[in-house]
Length: 485
Image (cartoon, rainbow, N blue to C red; front, side, top):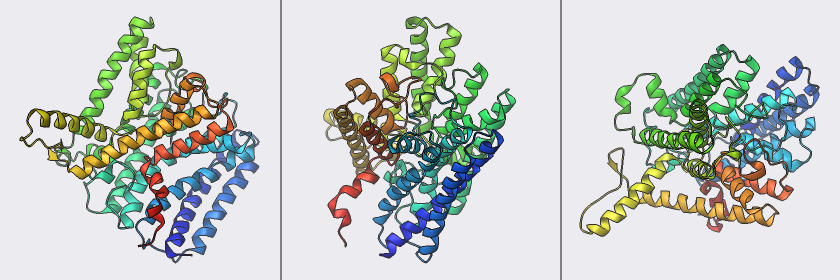
């Protein structure tokens, strides 16, 4: 076995040990609430932990990759391994009736998608509810961890292989020279926001158990809920608090660190992404609020609450629901599809194409139009007041086209698996963007339980593609990738 594969297995072993520890932590609610799952949770956690330890010990001497291309394989295999072992709690407790259901729920959690196969969430064991929440919290930060820790140590690039930083266009994360300190800062912000919103929700009158689960799933842009009607049963104040958590989860974490530590000098010329992000949210929320009041006969207070909370949930691809959106006016649904494709800022926990790429796409279109009017003028595409290279623009265009192609193929595959056109479109976009709720039976407070086994497996693959932003996984399918040299 090559040294590169040994390193890959070693790293997967480390991540499985972490996952095993998280599974075992679910023993706390299992024993506290006496839900009868402690034996199954113990076996699942120990099995995951032992496999991880075995891999780590077996390949302990492998410390780095010699072939930089293998980093793509490492990233993909890590997400696959975490998702596969994440099925154990569902299978061992019997809440998932088959492997396809367990994989769907596990992949949805690890990738922070929020789609579910459970028609009735509230009857699930407490250990499973916590496990669903923890997978989203872990998966939401896992992306940031990979960006800051794994890829730079392999000497490939200072930015992620599959997030917006790979293009080099987003320089908001260059605030530190030490990568170790950057990891600590980002982790610190994530943990701080998690503890802060648990405390705020608890002080608002929410049960501590509910506050933990709801914070885990919303600060990670995940969207899993411990209630059948998601956020609808929360008080109005609590819904606004959760909306604040979702709003912050869509902001670049490096920018959040600078804001929290009042490092204003490092924020200079770095507000284009957040300005675009907030502007899109504001304009969309106004449209939704007015539509709910004029077309759905909602009162102004209901329109403002549901409109603001639901719009930020969609834009950040969280998927939490303040109301049954499947019953809303069709133009609102169409707007939500567009917003979920856009997503939040690069360097956040959100899915979608990301605001930075959308800005570059829009400005590139403007540049092409100007070039037609003034062919001899120099009109570079600028971001943060700096010219964006043609290589970055091409990279963004490739990602955009790849997204479109994957969505088209995903819709076709779901239709061939027996899902009608509307639900195929909704499920594909919901899974690829990480939003979760689709259209039809999978929209609103619905679920994916009625999908065929083939459709669930396809959706699981789409979630993985979306979390890895397509190219990281698709590059493995190129024959040249596997040729030496």
